[in-house]
Amino acid sequence: MLVDVTPLRELPDYRRLVTAGLISTVGSQLTVVAVAYQVFRQTGSSFQVGAVSVATLIPLIVGSLIGGSVGDAVDRRKILWISALVLSTTSATLALNAASAHPTTWIIYVVSAASGGLIGFSDSSEAASAATLVGPAHLSAAAALNQIIMQAGVIVGPAAAGLLIANVGIDWVYAVDACTFLVSAALLWRLSPIPPVPGTTRPGLASVAEGLRTLRGNAPLKGIFAIDLNAMVFGMPRAIFPALALGPLHVGVRGLGYLYAAPGVGAFLGSVGSGWVAHVRRQGRAVVIAVLVWGAAITVFGLVHVFWIALVLLAVAGWADVLSAVLRSTILQTTVPEEFRSRLTSVQMAVVQGGPRLGDLEAGSVASIASPQFSVVSGGLACIAGALITAARLPGFVRHERPGREL
Image 1: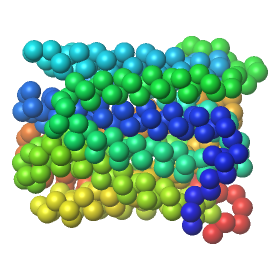
Image 2: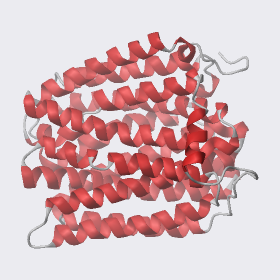
Image 3: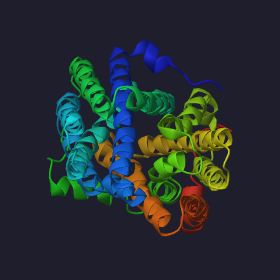
């Protein structure tokens, strides 16, 4: 039942990679909460909270596609540590803006967009590097371990953000994030080189197009991208967490941090106990079920007004989401050749990182027109409907099975 920790125990480079990922994830989650809170306090608008998130969408998608092309053709280690260094400067800029006498909202938009492009550029190389370092035998274990590391950061970061904002100020939150990127860069610099596969297409539009062409006729890949995008666009209500925390839930900024952290708690527990996922044979069907559970939990979350029940429902949603993530990552890494790994992973990163930003805009817009609660409930129901439609339109995805004699 428990996750296999063999890659962590036996592979020093993989340990450095995931440690760097944990540190940078904690810092990034600090900034996620700080940006949402700062924009909401300065504008009083949930739409603005969603808009500042979606401002990163185009840079993130472009950065992901370019990063995937470059990552298949150059040493991925260089991409990782250089990107971490540059990201430290974006967080430092947010810190300087927050510390000024009159913080400017447009600076948050610009810097968030720049950091989104950088994150997109580097994330595909990070995910592809993990798969390369562990090898085919440990792909499922690595996918689960990566989720454990990420969700640990998603728990610690938001919870710490609420406490730091309340006690030392937003500018210090951004400054801590800048420091986490510097530490991550130092760890990534110590990785062994991760050179490209000989004969890989040179970086550029032709390389990007070549990677996208591999999606033709590949129902499992189309399915994992479509169903995750659906879940994140309609079932991700984080943009209205500030309105809920400062409004109907009446829990303030400390409670806001817990709302952001709650899905991570469920996801962390799900990751730790995800050893059984490696033995799931009908992987496509399992992904659909997990997304349906996510949508149902989010729907009920929008109907409750008791804080601890809301946290439990968000944790259930996070548990379902991480099981879906482990399965989707395994499907991707087992169906894509090594020479296309960064490019196809870049598409996945664009969906994983871009979907929540579209979801922020969707949730914030509906909340501004109707109410925060209506936004959550309608989004959860739309997520359920979208999962069922995806399953109906892509039967090859639902029928996808992992080869072998697993259950």
